[in-house]
Length: 132
Image (cartoon, rainbow, N blue to C red; front, side, top):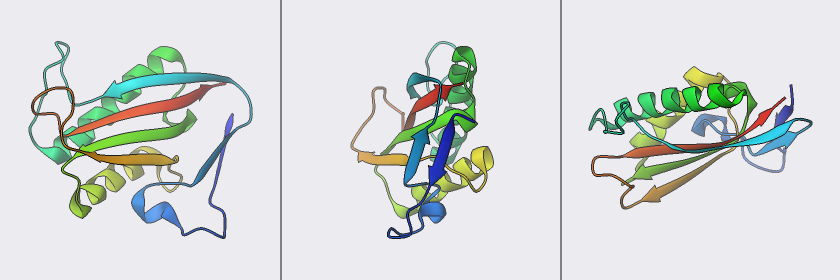
């Protein structure tokens, strides 16, 4: 595998947040995936439900990753954006990431924002991945 994740003992255990502190690229080619959200083929937001958006956006991310060669296990960093962030939304996100990566989540950057690009967007996710 071209990635190695770790959590230094001097830092807190971020697993409960669906996160890791460090990802090291050991070989391969970087792949950058633009923001993905819960949308259909026309780019329209598919649901106003936050939990539904958190389920659909990573599925769209998976399609983008697949088109470039890597998969979820090749994601080195996962920047996420949440409108009106709160602790319950963090739980939804952590659950979704566990479904995708189990107990080995990538490092994540979560930004609470006032709005995203389109009306109705509540969640967006980018990715930095490595193609072996």
